[in-house]
Image (cartoon, rainbow, N blue to C red; front, side, top):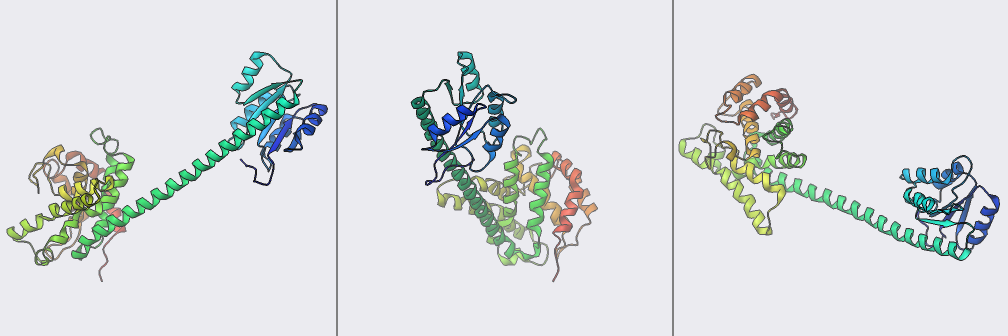
Length: 368
C-alpha cells in the first residue's frame, strides 16, 4: 500500500474496455489527480500492484475476459491491494447489481451515463476517507510497534531484575556454580511435560511457563540473609544451624514482597518468584518447611522446583558429599514419589530424565 506524499496528487486508476470512456474519465480527473488507465481486467491488476499504488480505482463491470466483479474479488483477496477503495462505474443499474457490487467490497456504485460533478464529488470523498483510514492504520501500526518495543524493554528489565536478585544468593554460595541455570531449565522442562496434564493444564499456560523459567533462579535469594559461618560451612550443619539455614525461604519471600510493597502493587512476573522462594522446600507429605504444606496446597511452581533443586543437589559434588550418578539421582527422586514429591511431577521427571542429563551436561560446573 502506498499513500501520496504531501507534494504528489493521489493516483486514480480507471478501468474500462471502451476507449471513449477512458478518454472521458482521463480528461475529467487529470487536473486534480494522477490518472492511470487500463482497458482490461488483467492489466488493471498489474497496475494495482505497480508503484505508485492507486489510491482509488474506478472499475467498469462489463468487460470481455475478466469482468469488473472478478477484478474486485481479486483486489480484495490480496492484502497488498485490499485497502484500495473501488468504485464501480457501470451501465448496470439494477438494485441487485449495485447490492452485489457492494457485497464484493466496493465502496460506491456509479451508473452510466455519468454526471461529471457526481463523479468528481464521489472521487474526492472517497480519497479523503482513504487518507483518513491510511493515517489511522499507520498510527495503529506505529502504536503496535511501540507497544512491542516497550514490551521487549519491560521483559528485558524483568530479566535483569530477576538475575540481579538471584545473583545475590549465588555470590554468597559460589559452590553452586551453574546451579541456577540448570534448575531454571529443569523447571521449564518439567512444565512443558506437564502442560497438557489434567491437573496442571489450567496453570501451565505458555505465558506461565515463560514466567516460571524467568523466576526459577530466585529460589535461593534468601541465602543473602544466612550468616557466612553457616552458609559457607565446609561440612554438614548441626540441627541448630539447619534451623537457621531453613529461614532462607522466608527471607527470600519477604525480600520480594517488600520490593513489591515499595512499588505499591503486586508484580505478576514476581508471583512465581515468591511462590518458589517460599515453598520449594515443602514436601508432598507435609514434612517440609517453612509452613508444613502438603499435597495440592503447595504451589505448582514450588513442586516443580522441589524436584529440580533436589536432583541438581544430588548430582553436584559438595565438600560434605560426593556427587551422585545420574542413575542414582533418578532412583532417589523416584523413591520420593508421594512422600517428598508430587507423584505426577515425579512421573513427568522420569519421562524427561534424559533431558535433565542433557541440561546438566550443557551447564556443567567448571573447576578452576
